[in-house]
Image (tube, rainbow, N blue to C red; front, side, top):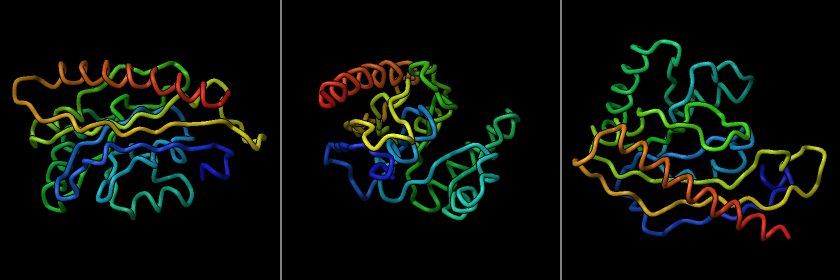
Length: 196
């Protein structure tokens, strides 16, 4: 899909992702082009946690649901908490890694939005390392459907962040937000230089 969009996609991985382990993966969520960009960072055996309304998107919704992804009702807070518990059960039963967008919604050019704590509560409860996947800037008119060349996008999977019992979910969310922000700025600048 990146090729069809005219995007030169550069993907980097640390190379030390253990295929025998499961992780909680988090990524920045910019816009609908994430399907062609940041999703390239998905590791084998990963499913996403996404909003329930995705199932109503023609064709994609059916594929999303049939692929075993977990749907969450964001409008119902108590049900969302139950979904987190269900997610943990599925993670154990099916030996899955879980991919979440901790911003909760697309940022649409507003920078990295504040993180919700769900992904981090899951990682702490299940004693899982966190894998951070960062995509360089794709907002602000960077990708347009009427152009053949939409520049360079870098998707970088960072070294897994080891589980620690010495931190709570809110502090972990704040730390990961800062970590992702620093790396988002770094690779966005690099992508801009590569385009020149």
